[in-house]
Amino acid sequence: MSMNGMNCSVELFASYDTIYPADTVEWCPIPEYNNILVCGTYKLNEADKSKTGTINLFSLDNQNKIKLIQSIPENAVLDLKWNPFIVSGQILLAAALSGNHISIYRLDEKDDDLSLSLFTSFDVPKTNGESHMSLSIAWSSLYENGSQSIAFSDSCGYVTLINLNDQLIRSFKAHNFESWIVTYNYCEPNILYTGGDDCKFKCYDQRLQFDKPIFENKEHEQGVTTCSSNKIRENIIVTGSYDEIIRLWDIRNMKHSYNNVKVDGGVWRLKWEPNKEEYLLSASMFNAAHIIDTTLDVPNICQSFGEKSNRLYYGADWCYRNNTLLEHDTKSKNKKIISTCSFYDHRLDLFFVNMKL
Image 1: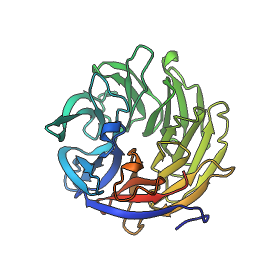
Image 2 (image 1 turned 90 degrees about the vertical axis):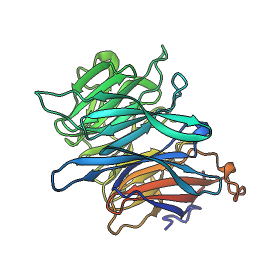
Image 3 (image 1 turned 180 degrees about the vertical axis):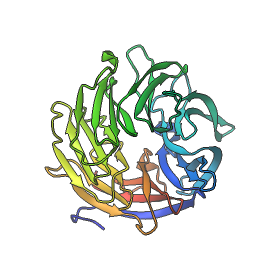
Image 4 (image 1 turned 60 degrees about the horizontal axis):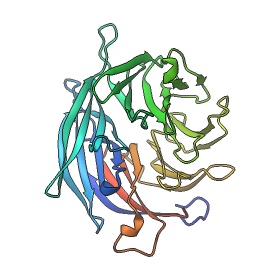
């Protein structure tokens, strides 16, 4: 339903049964591969408490038909992130996994056939002999020397940085409980944001060796689960929480968020619309999905969609594909494609969104 009469409608056009419960979906940001997406799954074996999952690679053709290209058996998948930059000719996908390690996969193309192959993997550091489970993962932008780092957060509150040579840069305790989210400032790769189950939202500067946060905020009333830096409005960050509130922050004044909107159901994933980064897509756990307009004085839910019964929304993302490529519909330049994935019914859904962008 449209909340404010704005020209914004959502239409389901494809669904896929992922078999295992689905918890993360990511579209490839590399222009030549904008029709490629991955969906991660997480299956808990109740008998022995073991965790398994799959990384599923899909393509979307010009008739908007979805096709499973590859399904990779793995440990349970907690997070997937494509590298937004091509490094040494490689298109890379990072996976945060339950088995105390992260894996980096490479997208290969041979005779027009695509597949993911293991590029490298890295064990999550232990503390006091205790193994940690990685929960979220993030790629930095490129540093001035052209290098890049990967950060991941874990179940014991630590955040760890590595480089693509598997070298440990730093591991430090960021939160008292689970560090649910880690992300970089897109415009300044030395700046890192973290959120944890201790309700704290923090910022660290790599140039200060992560000895202590440069700010720490406890405005969220429950665990901070997601955070995203805006590539276009360089000072804007957004956070989400179990407290069901999405908060917008200006890094020039981090004492308080400057705006917020309540979406109910808990917020697990927030994604900026890739072109203008004015609209947010929220995977709102028990309350399906939402599109939020952040350009107004008060953020406005312009669309709520998705079935709620027996569903738990952990994943949502926008397709980067140029909409003029939609062969059957060249008239609507404002037609976007988004995807959501839900846990209990192990479903990946794809939607058309008509909106005023």
